[in-house]
Image 1 (cartoon, rainbow, N blue to C red):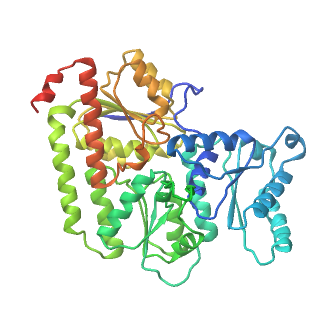
Image 2 (image 1 turned 180 degrees about the vertical axis):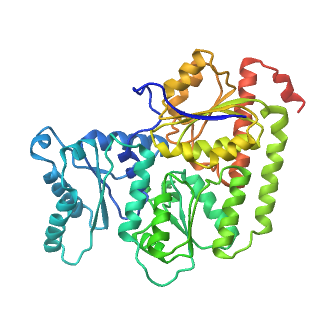
Image 3 (image 1 turned 90 degrees about the vertical axis):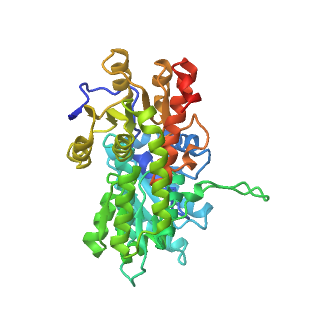
Amino acid sequence: MAVEIKQKDRAGVINPIFTCQPAGAQYATIGIKDCIPLVHGGQGCCTFVRLLIAQHLKENFDVASSSLHEDAAVFGGTMRIEEGVMSLAHRYPDVRIIPIITTCSTETIGDDIEGTVTKINRTLKKEYPDRQLILLPLHTPSYNGSQVSGYNVAITSLVTALAKKGKPNDKLNIITGWINPGDVVEVKHLLKEMNVDGNILIDTESFDAPTLPDKSGFAYGSTTIEDIADSANSVGTIALCKYEGGSAAQFLEDEFEVPSVIGPTPLGIKNTDIFLQNISKLTGKKIPASLVAERGRAIDAMADLAHMFFANKKVAIYGDPDLVIGLAQFCLECELEPVLLLLGDDNKTYARDPRFEDIKKKANCDIEVICNADLWVLESKIKEKKIDLDLIMGHSKGRYVAIDNKIPMVRVGFPTFDRAGLWKQAIIGYRGAEQLANTIANTLFTDMEYKKDREWILNVW
């Protein structure tokens, strides 16, 4: 079967799959403890991203804005950086790092971020001689890349600036990429079962903030500056997502000789097998019987569903490239047919991703992969009868395509805001594979009942 990889056949974007680079940088940096990112641009560059994050996680996070206005286009906006940093320093005495995230306007103006940081550091030294406040420029122009590359820029810049060689720590770096907090919990579970001490970059488990009796309950990230600094002393690094953290893993190997493994994202049985095998190789720890049992339960759950309900069902998947590729591999394990894969930015390296060769070898259908795609591609293919789908998988921005065309949809990726608690549910690992298979099945079952399409089968299977 063929896997055809191509670019979208028009220049414009209608209903984009991704948002911009600063969004990725903001999501990465809110996962750091004692950190408030400063978005250097218009107010909306901060506000709309915070809205997306709040919609997805149902939590609020501190993200500051330099709030540029028209005068900055003529006179530059560096004064707003100075005012923003000093305001944060005065108001938040516990803040230890302020990433300065650029946007399309400030990159086009050509503001000297590094020079401004040097100037601000002199001021900080005078006003706060006993305080160390790290200012980290993150160059993420919105007219280039997407939230995917923005996340990668942020993680790579953090590791490059902060990692420092010291004593070996016997930890394993896990660069998570843009996965949900529920998936981070699952990663920690797998490490615990293997008796491995993980250095999680970025640890978002604490985004699930409790409301406590004293009414406190503000969400925050758990990765510390010290965790990032200590990444240079670990036994190895595994980047779960090639395009969201792979560069940071490679830097640690090149600069500090920390062995790195980049991907694949542990979605499905085989990819989780590879993940655990890589942990074992880097740490010398054996895969325990408890995880073998988890694997068996996941396979059993998938086998219960595959032949009777999943076989030959046509699926379209859109979103983050690591997620889309991993889900396509998972679908093939379940006898689902991932006939259309939509990747939402213009990264030319996607076409050379070796995972597509693996998909091609295992495919039981022809697969079309469209890069720099938008949701209009999906909608037009459905309406023009170029594709006949049984299921759509992607984030909530595509919900109306599914609703209007009466196609069942499984919500995955970012943002998912029209279903409750999905960000708490893991889809990676063996338990995540079992959960995902059951979610797909239940979505199809509901559709069968709604359309009265052979729903009697559910009485006898």
